[in-house]
Length: 265
Image (cartoon, rainbow, N blue to C red; front, side):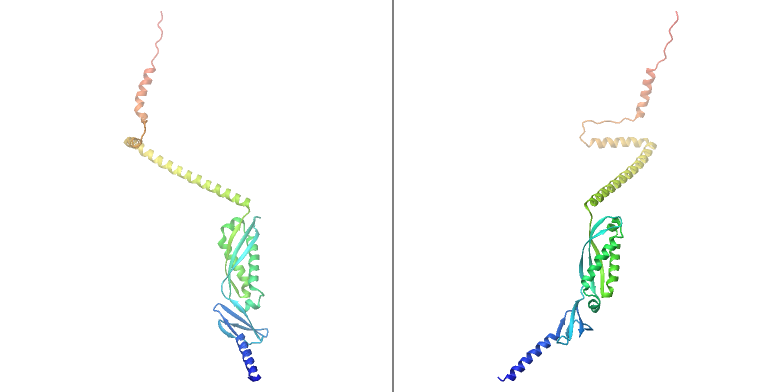
């Protein structure tokens, strides 16, 4: 085989390698930021794209999927001077791939740092009770602040959620005592309200029984029926004081008799 044929084969293989190196395949969620001799040309994708080989065109892949970023625990001093450890999670995605590559060196790292500093500064404006009770409002405020700062980078922060608020041990015990005292207060209020309602009903029942004497006898008989259903060895019969009033008056009259004066001799 002549040497010229080897040369053609080598050139063919080299040309094939150059063509293959110029072909890029981007997935549906990927975009390619193209730089031509250092200048930004634009964004291409998804699908097959052709680059000018030999280092003329360079491409940076950028994913457009939502990124779930865990914000490391941060030591926060609340407005009422209590130190707590708070961690959170942020959800964001790249909306403009060219800005995410050109405007910031590493948009993932930059977004993480912005989220950490914003978390410390915002939570420091709240007292501990508000931090535990108003998480929804705080999450919304964090999302708006971080999104405003990352918007020039083409990054959209869709959600920020506080995950855990770790309290010091002595503060946990104080909150537990406060919760227990609150439960006792509510129990006492409910018990007092029940006693008040019961006294009102008893007062109304007493008024009805006072107007209808026969109702007292019916109640008396009903009580005896309830006692008879149980296995009792001793039954105490309550007797109304009105039945004994006449007998007591006679006994009192018999005991008190007028004294006779002594006769003079």
